[in-house]
Amino acid sequence: MSETVLEIQGVSKSFAANRVLIDLNLSVRKGEVHALMGENGAGKSTLIKIISGVHRADEGSIELNGKTVRFHSPFDAQAEGVATLFQEIQEIPDLTVAENLYAGMEPRRFGVFIDWPRLRASAQRQIDELGLHIDANMRMRDLSPSSRKMVEIIRAVQKRQASVVIMDEPTANLNQDEIDALFSMIEKLKSRGISIIYVSHRLREIFQIADRISVLRDGKLIRTDAASRLSEAEIVRLMVGRELPEFYPKRPAPPNTVAMRVRDLCVPGELEDVSFNVRKSEIIGIAGLEGSGATSVVKALFALRRVSKGTVELDGQAVELKSPRRSIDQGLAYVPEDRKSDGLFLGKTVGFNVTTGDLRRYFSWKGVVVRRKPAREATARIVSRLGIKSDGRFAKIGSLSGGNQQKALVGRWLTGRYRVILLEEPTRGVDIGAKVDIYNEINALAESGLPVVIYSSELLELIGMCDRVVVMRQGRVSAILSGPEMTEEAILDKALVRTEDDRERPVAHLAAVSA
Image (cartoon, rainbow, N blue to C red; front, side, top):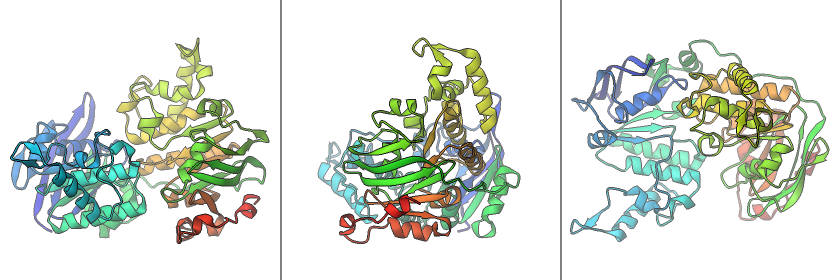
C-alpha cells in the first residue's frame, strides 16, 4: 500500500476574501481508506470538491496515477477515474432504482436501444450481492432515506474504472446493517486497489475503517498519520486546536416533578400504546432500530403523524395533536432530522432563519413586516450564544457550514416561550467542536426547567446526554432504561426483534412509566 495514487501539492482556494484552503499537501495511497477530519469550515468539503472537479484550485497541482490533471468539471474527474458520493443524495426521484443506478451508462442493444431486462437484472444483482433488501424496480421516491442513500453509494462505486472514490458522510441515515454492508463494500474496493477518501465526523467508524487519517484546521493540513498511531482525544485536539471540556457536559439530576405525560399514543402502522413521562429539567432519549417507531414518537408529539389514540399532557394541560402550527402555539419546539429539507429556509438569511421560531414577536401585519430592532437584537444574541460563524445576519443560511446551520436551527427555538424541546438527530453531520456547543445548549435548556426529548441513532450520544432512554421495538416501548442500565449492549438488546411473536407479546412498561 505504498504506491501513491493521488498527490496534492500546494493547493490553495479562496472565495472572495475568505481563504478556505492554504498551501495544502496531501497524498493518497493505492488501496487505502484515507479519512479526512476537521471541524465544519476546516476545508474538507472544498478539498473534495476540487478533487472531484466541482471547484478549481487557485494555486497548486494535482497528480492522479502519476499524471498531472486539471479538472474543469465533474465529468473531467469521472473520466480520469474519480467517483464521488456527496453528502446530499443525488437522485432522480421519479425513476426506478435500476434507472438511477445506470443513468447515463445504460446497457444497449445494437448500440442504440436500452436493454431494459439486462439493466434491471444487473441492478438487482448488485443490490443482492450486498445483502440489501431493495427492489430495483421501485421508484426512488418510495424508498426510505437510508435505502436511497445505499443506492447512491452503489452508483458511486460501481464504475470499475474508478481509482479513487470519495465518500462524504456516507453513513448518515444508515442503520447498522447498512453500515456493515457499506464497510464490506469498502473492503471489496480496497482489495481491487481502489482508494477511498472518507469524510466523517463519527470517530468510532473512522477508527473502524480508516488506514490513515488527515486532520484539517482552518484550511491547513495539521497532521497525517496511521490510524493506529492516533487516539480519539488526539484527533479532537488536532481538530479544534485546544483541549475540549467534558465531551458530554454534566448537570444536576432532574427533580421528580413530571412536566409531560404521554399515554397510550397510537399512530396507525407505526406506534401502539406508547407511554412515558418526562420530568421537569429531564433529557430523555428515544432509541430504536429502523422501523421500530423511534422517529415516529417525536414526529407524533409534534403532530407530524396522525395520532389515532392516546393523550399528551404538558404541565397538567392536554395537548391537541392537530397540526405542527397548533403544536407550536401550545409550546412545543421541534428540530427535524433533515435540516436542509425540513428545517431551514436555505435561500433566506441567518437572521430570518433564527427568528422564525417566534413569528408574532418579530413579524407584524401577517408576517410581512419585520420588526427590525428586536429581530436584529435576537439574532445577535443567538449568534453569540451558540458561536455561529457567518458573514453577518444577512448572510444566506445555505452558505454556512453544516455545523453552523445546525446551530442556527437549534437557536431558532431560543427566541420563544416554549415548554418542551423535541430534537431529532441534533448533531448529525456536525463536527466535534460544534457538537459540544450544541450539547451545552441542550443542557442549558434543560437546566432552565424545560423537558427535552431527543431521538438519535448514535447510542453514545443518548447515553452521554440523557437521564433516561426509551427503547422502541416494533412500534412499542420495550424498555425505559436509566443510570447504569443505559449501555449500548442493553439498548440494542431491548431494541432487537428476535422472533415473529415479539409484536404479539404485551410490553411490560407501565411500571417504568411511573418511575
